[in-house]
Length: 92
Image 1 (cartoon, rainbow, N blue to C red):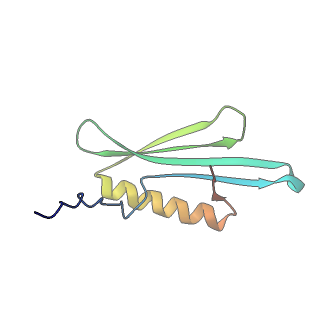
Image 2: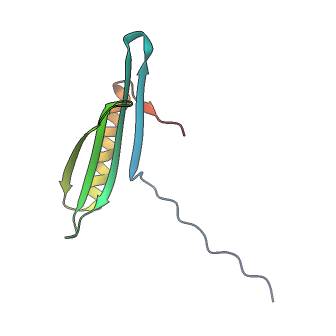
């Protein structure tokens, strides 16, 4: 009898969270932007967005979406817009 193989792992196709930074010391600019898709108790989905200067109190906004797919689409749109404005993926 051949040994059984472990079950394959399904990797997510679309990100459900993102963390970005924009650091420009010449402009004294140290900013962050974080987004995450969260479930809502009534079957909807929330897009949690947090932003501000690194090391200070953050600002926060919750956007309600009809389902998780719509929230992930909104996250992708914000992610593209922030990258166009100079934000980069946060490393570690």
